[in-house]
Amino acid sequence: MTKTPASSTTATDEDGQPDAQPYRDAKVEVLFDAETIAARNRELVEEVVAARPEKLLVIAVLKGSFVFAADLIRAMHAAGLAPEVEFITLSSYRDARISSGQVTVLRDVESDVRGRDVLLVDDILESGRTLAFAKDLLVARGARRVMVCVLLEKTHKRAVQIEADFVGFECPDYFVVGYGMDVSHAFRQLPFIGYIPDAET
Image 1 (tube, rainbow, N blue to C red):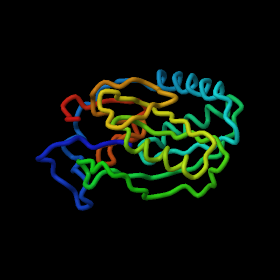
Image 2 (tube, rainbow, N blue to C red):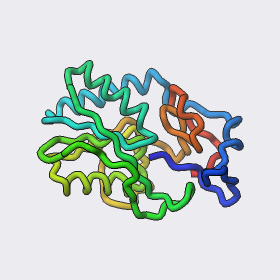
Image 3 (tube, one colour):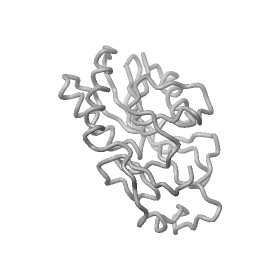
Image 4 (cartoon, rainbow, N blue to C red):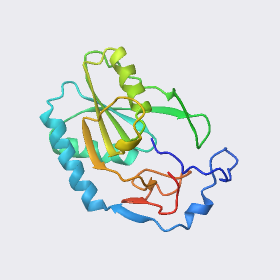
């Protein structure tokens, strides 16, 4: 789940989201290019295959993971896996900038997870609150096993005890955009993972 850069002076748009205009003209530095991401996705799928999942259900945490999840499930198909795919939308922000620490389900999965192996896919594992909530929720609903796959991991900001089973890249303390991740809906279209040097994290 992508977080918006924090700033006490950030203007907001009509939806209460921080105004992306100050960032739209910002220079985005490349952190991981498209070729590096594609190669790592294939490696992640090899790791998933090695875990020998049964009745695999992939659940993408929206919105930030949608590009990563799409590429990952196509790589799974190429590797001979045939997962079912679901989506969940969660929020832990009482406004666009500050986490409340309490996670709310905005859109739930429709599938019955009982007795199934579930792969939760998210963009960033940072505080861990969102993914810990989602994992506990699915375990409580009877999932046989819940594995976590994240594109990026920031270990120094963990607020709860949770570890990802599959990690794309260790991420420095940058505000990252691109490859599905955004600042107020901008930059999702970039084919690489980048960062805005002057943005606060």
